[in-house]
Amino acid sequence: MSSEVTRKPMLTVTSGLSRNAVILKLEGELDVNVLQVLREHLEPVWALPPKPFLILDLGELSFCDSMGMNELVGVMQRCESRGTRLLLGGVQGVMARVLSITGLRHAFEVFARLDDALRLAVARP
View (tube, rainbow, N blue to C red):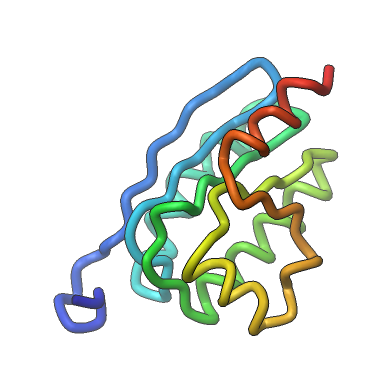
């Protein structure tokens, strides 16, 4: 059931911190109705001194509309301005299709598995 039908945000965001990265796990739907949920979780990230990496774990997203993709592009631009590399982990299924269809697959650093994104972040000083 989509958030448009229920009018309730259907996005859960959890966060973690490692030596080199901030990690946000997104679960549910990333659409126009839940953008504020993501923005509220990103506010403390932007308040921190920049980390080398921001990893978004998208493995549990079941839907992403054009406004959700626009928000991810905005996050990427904000990361670039801070000198932070944005890594998208767990990109399979829905998100792999959305990135491919929109032509944004190569605009992001994309990893099919979250572990691969984490490994890159840990390997870099």
